Each structure stands twice: as structure tokens, then as C-alpha cells.
Length: 242
Image (cartoon, rainbow, N blue to C red; front, side, top):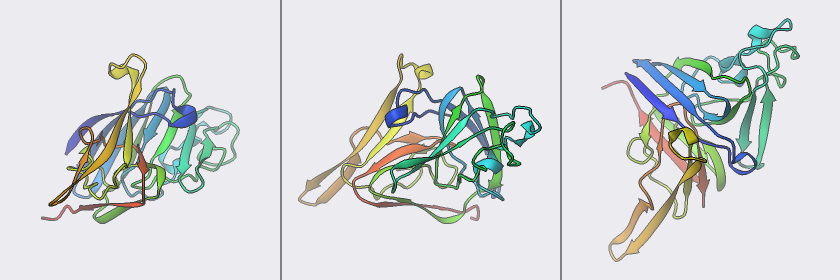
């Protein structure tokens, strides 16, 4: 399987004016997958939807080749991981020349990028950078827990397309929102979010659930904001077996 996708998003709140673009390519054979994510200068919301030997920033985005005073491939870049309970970010900085940690991150590169999670990668290198994630495609029943309020998440399986039809995000609440960013390079002169909001309409035969606008679409290696009016458990079932 070979899928080429263009993933776009932006940081909500204080970083909402930053441009974001990420290009991803995924290759898979049976249950082994390869996701290549190209991060352009500025903010990129990225995800690793594979199980690796170590799903941390330090391992997946190794900056340690620049030790001994030389800059690493991501030197000066910053990663942010949103904590929806504390409503704050964990932050780490790529600093191979100054860090004593082998993977070249000031905070030891311990921020996780597990399937279902997403992070911001602020590319401060001045040029596009590429990372390739190699690991096992999650199988069986995979879940993402969403708390009330804003959550930075991704599909727990490397799928792309409609989150409802392709990724089984069907147990949403009335009023839930998804934010997907349009980078200026896609035709928006200033960039803007695509906002998707659930609108549940009642009727004599029960409820009809639908998104106000066409269902959200995300790509392999892309994260998104999910603003939940009540907790949600996103479940995806996948198997390579017949």
C-alpha cells in the first residue's frame, strides 16, 4: 500500500497565526509500516501511528547526530504536546550542541508520540526537514480517550480520509468540534481553520447524527484538534488477517 497525503493544521490559541504544513507518505507490508513526514518551516501538527521500539521524540526525531558541537537535523526546533487535563503544553527543544542527552534534546526527548496522540513540531531550521517512522501497524481494538474540552489527537491507526466513514469516529456528542488547518499554500491567502461541528437533530423516530459540514478529513501522520462537549472514546478496529 502506498498513500501520499498532504496534512495541514495550526496551533490553537497563542500559536493560532502560525502556518502549518506537513506532507506524509506511508508504506506498509502486512503489519509493518513506514511513515515519512516532511515538516516545512513553522508549525506542523504530526503523529506517529505506528508502534515502535520507543515512541518518544528523542527516538523518533533523533537530533543526536549533531553532538560534539555540531547542529542536529532538527536543531533549534521545538515540540509541544498538549495536556488536556492540565490545559498546558509539555515542551522540548532540539539542541544537540548544548544537550548532554544522546538524542540531542534539552528535555531528554521523553515526550511521547504514541498512536492516537499528536504533537506540534515547530520547525526552526529554515528549511523543510523529514522524519521516517518505522514500526508495527496497530491491530485489534485501538482506542483514543478524549476528555471534555480541547484534545490534540490523531487516528490510532495509519488511515487517511473521512474520520467518520474511514476511521469509525461515530460516537460523538452534540456540539463536538474538529479543527483542521488550511495552510496559505493550499489557496487560502491568510490561512484559516476548517471547523466541523456536530449537529444532532431530534425526531419522532429518534435522533439523526450528522456533522454540520462534510465530515472532517485527516491524513496519515496528521493530528487534529477535537473539542469535546463530553468525554468520548474513539475506537478503531483493524486487522491484516482476512
